[in-house]
Image (cartoon, rainbow, N blue to C red; front, side, top):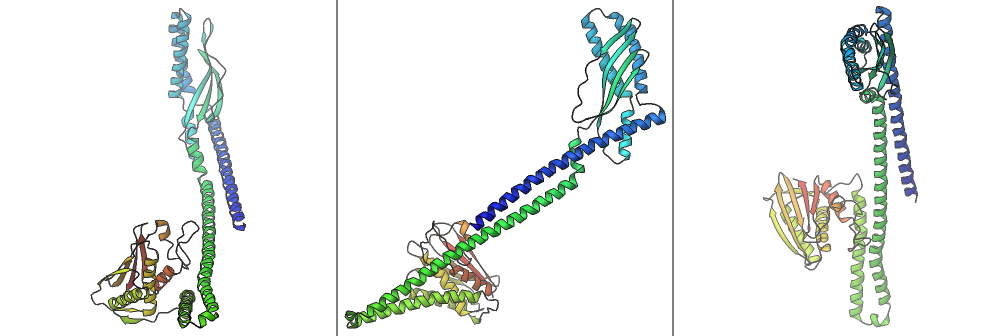
Length: 449
């Protein structure tokens, strides 16, 4: 319950943190965007003020002069040719379009603003746009309207530099210069990149801490389950021989058994067999405890691996009354190696025992030993039930046992393969496993010569 509560709190805290960071990113973005628009608006108006102060001009003088001459031609040559409303509409469109082109080609305020902003080290890759409203011709017969309407509100990427209104010999014009920050997102991102980097780094750090915490909690849960499973298995394994010994002891108290020497002998053998089994369980736990100690050392002797392994397999078959078929193959070229005979024997016996235990048909075990690159390589392959890939990374862990649902089909404490790995590494070697469900398992032990 406490672990579940802690997980819920962690997830809640993570979601709150991520939501807050997203809010911070949004706030930083809006703040930088406002600063960007304010900066370009201020600098562009400063540039216009400087130009007006220094040259008494706004940068549209040449454009207005060219427009004035163009309007004179329109008044003298185009307007007299108008005969219908359609002709008037067409003329208005052509005149407005032409004036836009003249202004775009001849005004130099935009270039001056770009240079001024660039001088301060800011991005000058923006577009400018001039919006005309109104535009009126002054003819000998009065005013001739070209364009006059309610100006639209500027888009969110537009900055108004200034509104102008001028009257010349042949026309009256009102126009507005705007800066179009279409690339504002790139500009804002570039300016906010450091803040975003810090926020991203904090998110990554929190996610890493969360992942490590989650992993540790999951590992703690897994180890707790393994520990509980081990205690349950150990209790079961210890109670079985103890119960048998208790029942056998009570059997010996019966008169009909005491007067029957054969029954007494049979019961005594049963007690002895279960005592041996009980002693083996206790020794297994004690041996694993010994292997956990840092001062653990091997008592090595120089041996011929072929002879030693053959002796182990022969003794195993004898002890289990020929419970399996063992095929042996040796290619060690009469090499010798230093091994702790007792622990090495137990290591091989554990693999042979598992090969028999986890086989649902007649066990066939292949034991090979060969010399490979200065190492003694031992393989123990069986025709058992095999293992799925998800278990291969855990089978050498202490107390780990493969279960089917909540049921363990075979008895054991989950220490055999852990013992194998500890003995292999104590000899300076390693152990690996390959397996597929239904196709058996192969253990490979490599020990340096």
